Amino acid sequence: SIHAIIGENGAGKSTAMKILFGMIQPDAGRILLGGEEKKWGFSSDAIKCGIGMVHQHFMLAGAYSALENLLLGTEAHPFFQLNNTAAKQKLRHLADKYGFSKINLDKSVESFPVGVQQQLEILKLLYREASILILDEPTAVLTPQETASLFSNLKKLKSEGKTVLIITHKLREVMAVSDEVTVLRGGRTIGSVRTADTSPDKLAVMMVGRRIMPICGTRSELPKKIHGKINGQPVCQVSGVKTGDSNLLDGINLVVNAGEIVGVAGVQGNGQNELVRMLLCPRDFAGLATGMVSVCGLNIFNGFFGMETKAIKKLGVGVIPEDRQSEGLLMDRPAYENFILGMQRNRKFSKKGILSQKQIINSSLQALKNFDIRPQRTDLNAKDFSGGNQQKLIIAREFEMKPRFLIAVQPTRGVDIGAVEAIHRQILAARDGGTGVLLISYDLDEIIELSDRILVMYEGRIISEFMRGEATEKNLGLCMGGAKA
Image (cartoon, rainbow, N blue to C red):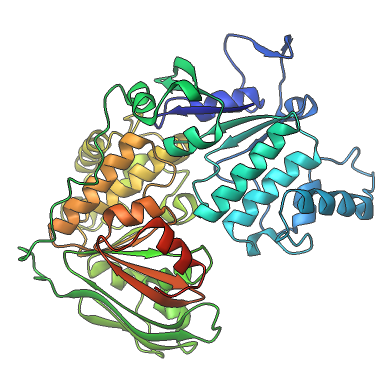
């Protein structure tokens, strides 16, 4: 069967699964496997019992090859030499069977897009012949096409007699793929139901204790007059930007005006990451690309000159990065330090170069409350928050800066349905307050719901543009595959 586990951020979903996987030792209770009580001190014990886990943030050694990652931990003895030829044959058979043909076993893992990295993690479990597979937020970084492929594979695994436990916040996906659902809230089981006997609305109420009101249909129209400093002028202009490799950026032209949300749709790997880098780190492209880029009225790139990221941020640019752990947070530093990153020299937090600890603590605690970041402890290191609460910490920081131009990449990745609602309202409120927003997301529902204009990227080019109300999941999907609107 496929069993979904849902709940708000911090409800205990990942913790419960890490206990099942042997990463965390329980203080009480029992684990029964096939009716037999099990106790293990390490994950290796759980793996020997046929349990495997794909974590929300992948556990891969990026500098090493796919083959080395797949075989890691299967060595019988430090001096035992693996038969790589036999291992490769088995892995290629599994990869072909489950449609993981994009995995080149000899390439380094860090060169793979995240969708292929996830396939690699699943292939690792299949190679170890796991009978119980735990997937933590498996679709958080996947495109709709990759999600459909994943679900097809999960159903194939189910038909082969394997058990799948899937943690997710996406209720539509719960209804599409699972047989049963268990809801957690505040570290406790609220209830378990058959998927066929429930609905997304009922599950949402079980998760958060109240009905979630959808954003769609409540959005205010784009204001005719913006009461900000920019007054509807462009906050971002990209003109004819082309990099040396045509597979990255190939003649990009786009404008983001104050008071509008411009959504960018596209299959991952079609130039979205390079576009964000061009806007934030143009020095990386100096001498390697042509075209012009201006942000908040200033030229930040002209082919030879690229402005420093620090200076670009000072113009009033906010960023919600795609990878919250490596690009958005200092994982070993407390929440209050992460909250003021980039604002540490502001008069609000610093006087004559000396940080005001009291003001920093008070402001960060208020942010934790405003954005419902749990637990509300400013002294807790970022790594000790759940993934969704880490995301909310970044969003709280960026909105505290009141940006003129906001670059939001996968802003609701890995957050629960209640938090998605709150984040969407924050983005819309910023838009209505005069902020120009560039929204890059692989969640088409999010793109369609929030965007005033939608651009589709394909092979480093913008091939289609839709005004609000014109785009559907079907026509966007066609364009994402290369068909022009």
